[in-house]
Picture 1 (cartoon, rainbow, N blue to C red):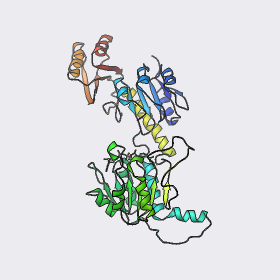
Picture 2: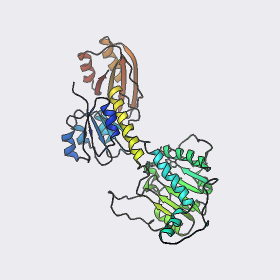
Picture 3: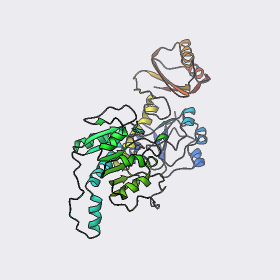
Picture 4: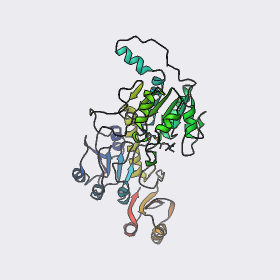
Length: 401
Ligand SMILES: NC(=O)c1ccc[n+]([C@@H]2O[C@H](COP(=O)([O-])OP(=O)(O)OC[C@H]3O[C@@H](n4cnc5c(N)ncnc54)[C@H](O)[C@@H]3O)[C@@H](O)[C@H]2O)c1
């Protein structure tokens, strides 16, 4: 049997190699990305593809990758991959949805202290050669109220650390969320804005959030309060933010994400926020730390390994999720199929007619595809496998031991 082969592009973190090598997976690396035609050539004999955000995985690439079983996006976003086409081609996609959560939280904490303390202004004065020793406008964060909008992975972790600093935490989320520690849920966004000394935005990138934070919301914030956005650039109206900083209503802001961001390191950056006092601008680096890169390398490689070895699809972004473990001594059939009525009945009939004893079976469906995992006590003969493959609805059948 040929060894499993992984192609890793865009300098995926070397920790991925450790996970693959320990499991006998051969690795080939390219430091850059590949264009569509280069990718099709390179994928001919590849089982696993690892990319970051630059490599575009189109339907044409997927159709021309005969052996490809799984793609690891060693990053957070998966917009670069045609996910439905991958599901229909039976190729699982995994990413790292929370490997950089802590990094974003730490940046946010550092900014809320720096802004509350007006460190940017003290620092600038010193570099300009001025000894501006004053307590004016500088506060402790202890006892102040942090308003978190979007209480997901990042918002909720920020809540825990802010409380450890002695802050009171209020949060607002459109979904039902468990309040951690002593955090309190605000009844409305207006209530949060009226009470918070620091407002920090951590909503996701759904289309409905475009422009969700503009003039109306800034106007409701407390006099002298602080605004932080490390979520998505298109959710905030930066012209309004500028106006409220210039009027002195908002005392400081930190912005890490922008409606239009330059493509490459070293490119020019333009924004209405440039040059404003007590405003920290960072080039979308909230999640960019060495530790986050390591976490991503380890996390995604482990998901790919578990999928190939046990068929586990936990946190796959395009296949129905089944959390599975290896069952020693058992043989496992993984069957991806079109999600139409009667597939399981037909599959089990084929197994029954060939005397196959089922030890356990799980099914999950999502949209147009269903994923069935069946543990059986003995191996399958070739005829049974062929009949399963020949079912009209089958996308793939794989036998794992
Ligand atoms: N700056 C960076 O480098 C960086 C790094 C990682 C993540 N992010 C961004 O941070 C944001 C949060 O990430 P996460 O992992 O916590 O996401 P998440 O999906 O876990 O949480 C988002 C939360 O926002 C809530 N929400 C969505 N729209 C809302 C609205 N209009 N009002 C109130 N609540 C709303 C959701 O219900 C959810 O609880 C995302 O936009 C993500 O892209 C940025």
